[in-house]
Length: 464
Image 1: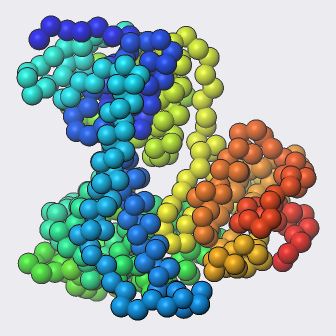
Image 2: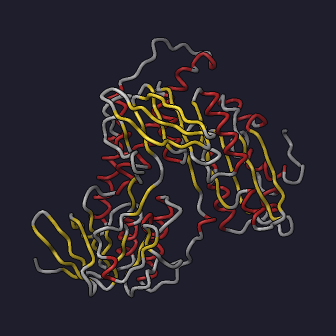
């Protein structure tokens, strides 16, 4: 098929790719985007969005069981699992359709099929009608990532799942084993446990949510265990024996091994970049540990070739991918964009309770030899948290002891994934503790915990 020419071709229509294409079009460039599956990528279809729809359901279900705490009566509570899943799929479908609309609105050409680099600024796309070759001086790789699978623990879709199976499951688990306690693992553990499954989480490291500040991780673990989850850290799943109605897991912890039966296993041991079949080696692109090596601006070292999002390395977050997409588009258009470093990007986990953070943990600050002031404020000292019936939470802030720079902020509790943005803006603007202390926070709001934590770094907390 005869080739079409563009200024920019993006391979992959996830939150990095489609945002890159939109920004390129806004800047007057002709843009094409190649996608083999659904617009919106994993995030909109099999990740960020449908999981939040499920977690909203479990949040409401949890609150319904607490009706008596608020003077309400609710009896015979139940749910239709098929409808729960169907709602999450409809939410994902609605947003994926929205991306299609955005492509049309911004006059971005969508090419459906598998794309690969064909050399000389060309992309060969295997479509249903045959192969089409597209040409552009600038090509952006935004092919995302997929679930990492460990030998012997591979998913089968029946009893052993990845996140995809967990989002469109064949049954509602009763005895659930979750392997891995990162964001993906804890979100699914939280959802299914709240909906009635007995969840056991096995984590090879010494704490759950291991990328978080140790104090926040410990707080979250206590909350999970209070809910009835079984948390096993410093443990490894050595093998899975699959049967028609169950899976027998061999779990090793502290030098001892035991076998346990579960009816469902979710493997959440990380992700691996989609680097295969793209022609990277032939193009001269460096791939290290499943990730394309790039500089701060997304350049691969091969002229005219860029990589963004999960394929370009950690942090593996949709908002990081989107920002990189904007950065690369503006660079291609001749602009002078400023990249954001990983320590300026917030991480959010939407389990119950929620966890959010940005910047250095206390351990990382110590490793760097930095003298810090630490402020802490619990939700129990916040009027809005008590009124909401959500008194369990903690905000922790770290400041450079000499300059007052906000080095990091770490939060656990109700709606902290919405609150963290205040600290994100503070980090980006190089805010100091003095400026935060002099800021007036509205009352009554959960955000007041953020202010009190800053005050606490100087022993000035007012309400605890």
